[in-house]
Image 1 (cartoon, helix red, strand yellow):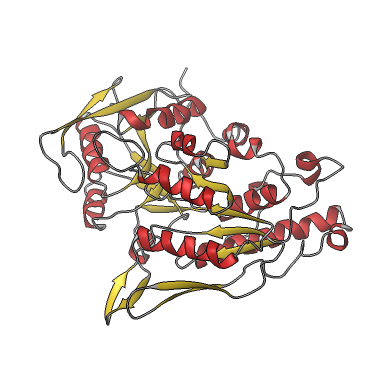
Image 2 (tube, rainbow, N blue to C red; image 1 turned 45 degrees about the horizontal axis):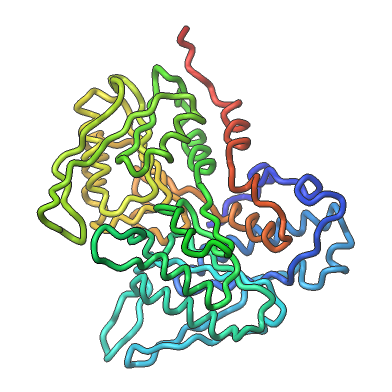
Length: 407
């Protein structure tokens, strides 16, 4: 369901962003939602239309001087067909000539299915990525520019080489670059240094910190942000820079866990964790925000919650960009009933199964309005600095949050 339109969510003024001599759009916007991205694209399309309607109130001549600037629907349909053998092709359902295209792809949407030899197959990240390449090939060079919005970066967990193994994420970026993609937009990349694979191409890893903090503040009326009542915790050493940002913005202490692993064996593609060791001050009586880029199976997150509770922590909030929950929800349901976790905040950038959205411990974080704003700014070749860095918006948000009354 679409949320009510709120101008304050954009914090964005046409004159402040572009100046009096606003740059003309690169071309008419075309949003191409691939299989599994339709629901999110519907919401993005709605908010982009509302944003541009607001432009006309300030600059009435925009619609006349820029054909295609205002449209009822910016979406361009694409049909990614499958043959009975499992092979596929992409067919664009409308003209793309001269358009500034934004292809939305959710490589984590496992709910999409197709038939192969009479069997029902659920689409894997590989299937979604192949459909993305087919769509780019179907465009056939007729678009003015191609931009890919891939919230969960394909193969982002396979971003570095520890032994004789593949570098899938880096090669994916090179492949998209060779196909003519000019901008790749992702959110909270597992390691944004993978952008070094395409140093001359546009690559943006957008943080979701502002939207998550806003959801936390709005849904927790008794929240008190203070160094004596709250702590931010990183679940591992790899995510400590992300947790440091949250802790710095909230003005609260930082703690971190590091994982002791058994490097003599590999289970489900990784070395199993023996124990989580905590580094930080006491957490007794404190509300804890555990920050990570994704929840995969969720085992590590729940192990950390148990460890924090054993140290007499108060409420535990989990903040993540992507909630995958690959092993189902039962463990989290039990943890909620046992009082281990209070709330899990995750964005709507990827597919969330219906039972997850209905869970009492889950809070959906809307990113559609912000994505519409990104599309609009990129279409004008405007600076993304204020959008990529949410510091100013977070500070403005926290000005209205009650802090603790401790001396």
